[in-house]
Amino acid sequence: MRLRPAPLEDWLRESYFTADIDISSSGVHSYSMAELRDLTALSHQDLDRLVFDDGYSLGAPAVRAAVSQHTGVADPDKVMTTSGSGEALSLIMSALLGAGDEVVAVRPGYHLLVEYAISLGCTIKNWHLDPARDWQPSLEELAGLVTERTKAIIVNFPQNPTGATVTEAELHGIVALAREAGAHLLWDGAFTDLTYDTPPLPDVTTLYERAVSFGTFSKAFGLPGLRFGWCVAPRELLTDCVHIRDYTTLHVSPLNELLAQAVLENAQAFIQPRLDQARANRALLLDWAAAHRDLVSLAPPAGGVSAFPRLIDVADVDAFCDGLFRKHGVLVIPGSCFGSTQHIRVGFGGRTDQLTGGLDRLTDALKEARR
Image 1: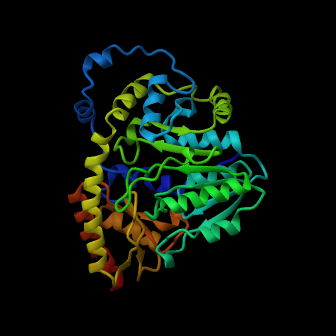
Image 2 (image 1 turned 90 degrees about the vertical axis):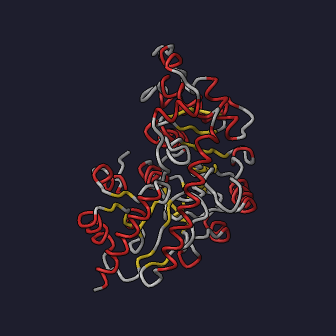
């Protein structure tokens, strides 16, 4: 197994900490520890009572129950807590996939969802989202990719980086295709709680026995630094994950789980304010794009807090993004990190003043590029 470099992480590794204005993120404005304690009523005494013993391989029972409650999954025994959803994704794929397995995955998309399967020796069939269709997924195309050889279908809706999502009817259609092929359906639900015109989709594991869903605090909860996530999966698959974990992380820190349980029990207190902020920021972003149709073309994101505009008159988007950072202090993600060389990822989940300031500087840079 050999993983290729992750262009997104390479782009962010240093610039994330030094940008004057960051409008690159796919997450919302992060909470502080003081805000976490205020929103959960977690006291210093609660923290002081914590003993740093080893933890449960699948997660503390009370925390798994809190995940179960939050996701609407009836059986907490199907839940595994992890260090971010990245650990959950890598554990599940390591347990499930191997050399020669055929996997269908969405493109453009988050690198882990594709590259990890490639490193395991899988054959990837790309389910392309078409910018000409405003990135809306075609189930007809998916049906043409799924065969009796398909071991897994890997998707993330709402989607990163495009903001595209599916309807509940389309969710059922994807499940039907997976069931017909006998394939596992791996559903990255990092942005499940961030939708604007429709309610969040139901957890896919409530619809299909071979589905696996993934969740994280890094996006809608505004707690990326807590590094807490989970998966919901068939119990036998979780047993295989534990056998792998016994050689790596063993379990989630009891401190992380203490904080996570308090957050999950007050989930809407964290999610709703950031969703409201993102909704207002999304309107500002769409107004900006409408006012600059000569510079950008933008499909309105239906979910998440990232948009994927095309830069109309920029020949080298990577060089443009580098200049935007170095000359204007603004961080965005070049679309090449997602295999789309004419686009950039713009995040709108952060502070409104950062977004408006970043868009103003982005506009200036785009105008300069046309001269």
